[in-house]
Image 1 (tube, rainbow, N blue to C red):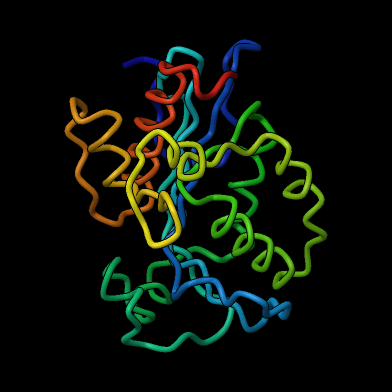
Image 2 (cartoon, rainbow, N blue to C red):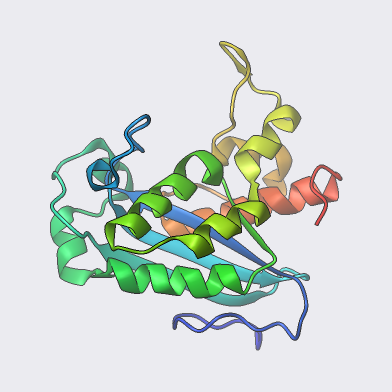
Length: 212
């Protein structure tokens, strides 16, 4: 439709209306919990972001392979999931600083930022990458006040038993429980996963669990 536009780095415009941006990362591995050294954290391999207006029309979308700022080990479990090898990231990826600048423009133009597991994974990995390129990260720190984690919010609604009560639902599980009519199937592509997160967020809003 006329409101949809792919690519580019300029912030979304919605004539002052509500803008929600979904974020998802594919990385070279899981966050290394308890390790404060950003240089030892895993790298962003792919960044996906989609900005929506209050009617869930797509205003802006990006899907970027990111060139790692430093060496990463080949053949990791993460690579087996998302299929992006270190060689592919180096050959086709854009510089990390450019990817972060694109993300910054989207985040700063948005009233809300959401993602599935964004609080405990994406937020920390992005923070480490900002530190790696020498940024202060003030814009990302300020964004924490407008983050909505669909994984955390969906947990008491999905009610999937785990060893210590209800477990965090995977993105596929949350879509199956909350919005099966959308027919979303996970494939570990960053932008595709943002769409899955948006499905879950819309279902949570419809149930009154999330209020914008």
